[in-house]
Amino acid sequence: MGPGSRRDTLDDHFGDFNWKKVTNMGVSLSRKLKAAVPERDQHVRDFEDFDNTLQHERPEQVAEWRLAVERWELDSLQEISLTQAAVRLSLSQQEADNLEHGMDDSLHEEVSRSVFNLLWNGDRGSAVRLARDIELLGGHPTDLQRTKLQERSNILRRKIEQWSKVQLLYMPVVARLRASDMPTSRTHSTEEKAHEIELWLPSEIYGDATDPVHQCDATLCQYEWELRRAQAYDALDELRRHLRLRAHLYKFKDAHIRGQRANTRTSAIIDKVESNVSIAAARYRRAWSALEHLSPALSRTTWKEEFSKLENDDIRGMSQGKPGQSSGNRTLSWIWKARGIASDAPEGEMVLNESLRIEWCKSRARATRWVEEVQLLREEMRRVAAYLLWHAAWWDAQADRRTGLALAEVEGIRGYAKRQAAVRRDLHDTFLSKWGAVNGIF
Image 1 (tube, one colour):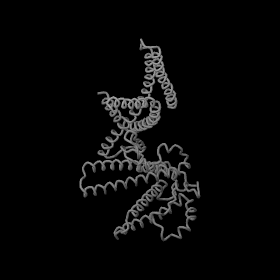
Image 2 (cartoon, one colour):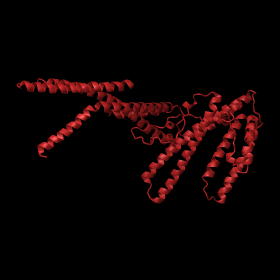
Image 3 (spheres, helix red, strand yellow):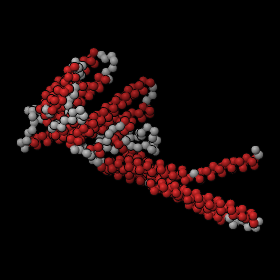
Image 4 (cartoon, one colour):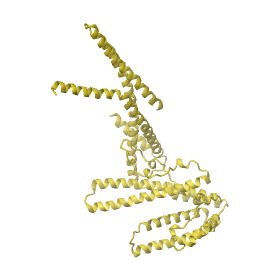
């Protein structure tokens, strides 16, 4: 091509591209708004939940964070003490009050209802830890390792046998359940492990689909409910603590660890933390499952507002999103918006406070960004519509600007200008029709 032909060809391509971009604005802006509005609603809702939780727990710090952010832009739930230790203290105090008023409903001279529940809680925890240690033992354990595990198994079996005798006093229905399960137990008596013995807790009785017995003591169900709630809170707090530690270790490893030996040791520590994360998640899921089984018997219908079901995608740090989420689309896991986000140690509280401050700022920035995105898209729609009307009027004005031409030329120029004006008005009407439907939905 010669220089003139080359320029004309490039102008044609550029003009065609620009014209397609203008005519496609109706579809592209509509598509962007449809994507932006749900994102805005999600991130605003996440930030409001997170902010409300922190406002109740640490209002002074949140107010300080907000003031600092607003100042920079211009130039809690109180601590939940619902732990297992707190519940044990509460049950003991309740029992003491009953004894002072002459009300003693204990069926055993040494083991009351509250102590009975605490005993099964300890036995269940020992069984879970023993099962985990046996699983991690490996294919070639030493004699010392096998001896320690066998001693723990023997101790656990004796404790369960003693506890089972007391259980018959408070839960007579368990005798029938054990009898129905006896043939299988006798067949495999030599293979039954201590950590596999069925305890028949109140939540397991109510959750047994094959024999739904409803004769368990209501007080025992209530005691287990309180202990399971505390267990869920403790497990969530432990899960958050290990997730914060894991995030710190990964950052420390990337910034400071060099060499094969140091990396191997750091990886071993991180693997241990990962194991603790899995253990805490399993504890929460066991507590959640027990609450789910007990809730119909106790007529508890709103407990899932307090405890959500823990999915694998929910187990992530504050700065982590779901797989495939970018930084701007990242959502905060519900475990960081749940009640009782706290730390006992002063240094732990400092780390937590800094982590919460950073995540609060990021969550606020994401919510603000998506609110602004929706506002900008709607403003851009308004400006595109105004531009098309202006451009149509501009083409109307061009129809009579040329003077001194032949009649045929004047008619041709006027017809071309009117056609261009009509095209702009058609685009304007079409765009408003598309956008009106979208804005009507949102």
